[in-house]
Length: 252
Image (cartoon, rainbow, N blue to C red; front, side, top):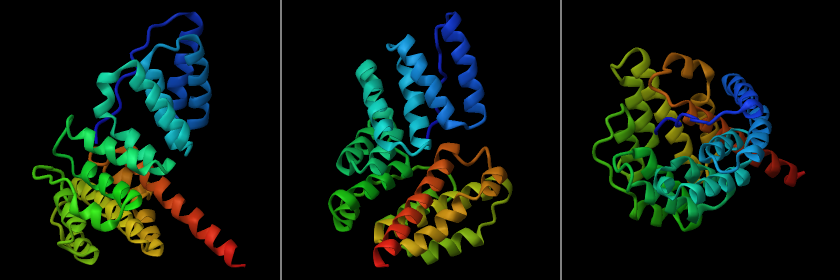
C-alpha cells in the first residue's frame, strides 16, 4: 500500500518547535510522544488536514483504534477528496470493530487504486466479521495486475483455490533472492496469518503473524516491505495473544 504523504505544515515559532519535536518522535517510533505533540499542534492549527492523518496513524500504531478512526474522519471532513484513498482508515475500522465501515472503505479505495491485492483481502477480512466467510469469498474483489511477488498467489488463497500449506510451499520454493525474497516472505506470512484469523484458527494465525512481525524480516527487505504493514502484523499478533489470554482467564 502507499506511503504516507509529506506533512507540509505552515510554521510559526511555537508550532515550529512542536514540529521539530514531532519529527524526532516519528524518527524514534515513539508513538505516544508523537500523539501528545500532535494534540498540541492541532490545538494551535486545527484546520491542517495532515495533522489528523499523522495522529490517526500514530493512534493506530499505539493501538488506539477508535481514536484513529475518529482522526481519519476529521481528515475527511477537512479534505473530502482524500476519502477514497485512505486504506489505512479501513484497517483502523477493522481493529476498532467497525467491520461494515471498513468493508466500505476498502470498496471505495477501488476508485483510487484498483489493482491492490491487499485492499481486496482486507475487504474480505472485514466482511468475514460483519457478514460471513461465504459472503466474503463470494464478493472478493478481483485483482489481476498486482506486480508484487506473492500477492497474486495470496489472492488465490482467499479465493479458495489454494491451501495455506501450498502457499507456504510456494514461498519456500521461490527463486527470488535478497529484498525481493524478503518481501515475498513477509506478505505471504502476513496474509496466511490473517487468513487463519478469519477462519478462527488463532494458534496457526499467531504462528505466522509472529514470523511476519519479526524485525529481522523488515531489515532484510526494507524496500519491499511496507513499514505500515509490518507494524500491522505486530498489531494483529498482539490482538490474538490478548484474545487467547482472555479465553484462558475465562476458563480458570
